[in-house]
Image 1 (cartoon, rainbow, N blue to C red):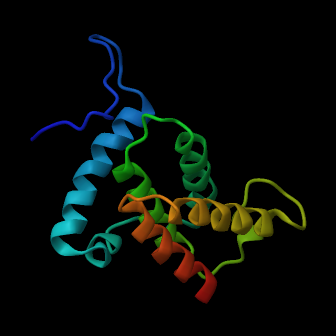
Image 2 (cartoon, rainbow, N blue to C red; image 1 turned 180 degrees about the vertical axis):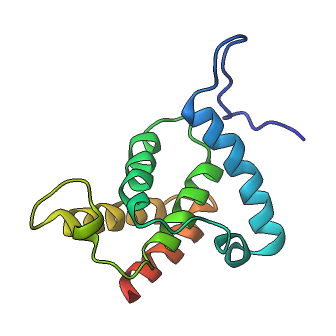
Amino acid sequence: CSRSARTPVSAPGEPPSALNRASNISRYLWKLSSARGYKVVLRFMPCDVFSVEPVLRFLNTERGNTEMSWECQYVLLMWSAQLVMVPFAFGVVCETKGDRAGLDVIGELVRTCKDLLRSASKSRDMAAVCLGRLLTR
């Protein structure tokens, strides 16, 4: 198995970073989804309603990082596509309180998907799926 040029590598003796672990796991999940289809892999992803905001926060903070692989973006968007189908109001599950908390999360996800629709990687396909699921919700 070859490593991509963008895969972050931690120094020897140093614990792997969250991005490094996420990139390694997402590479294998992407390979599974390319072999079996993303809908099959989605069935095994957790649907905890309180995962919506942390997943979106990780996607947005690490998306600006040049070391984040497209596989990681793909898997986070795939997980987000599953999480937006949870039948709860986003304002209820958000950590930030307020009247507009749910709308902020939805707006942030729409902005992220729109930005990734411009990319030339496979994450564009999953951004389209995620945005489609969010808008048909």
